[in-house]
Length: 79
Image: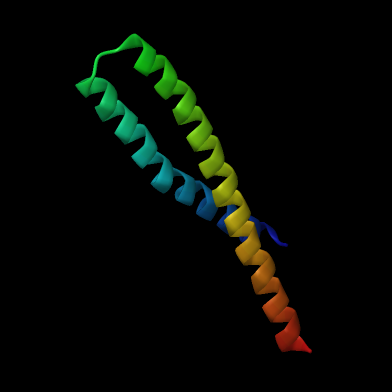
């Protein structure tokens, strides 16, 4: 894997993470603006962290899975 492919995959993973993560953060921001509750605020911090972690791993694995599938297709075409 050359540097341009690695940078392309990394940027795609980061963009995918932020596109999905903004919805999680936005939802809980609006929820906390609507309902003022300290327990809800504490719970939402944990939920945001867990959701963003899941989204991060999902975006990384999906991008590199796409790359490995692309490599398999290129190897089959060259044979």
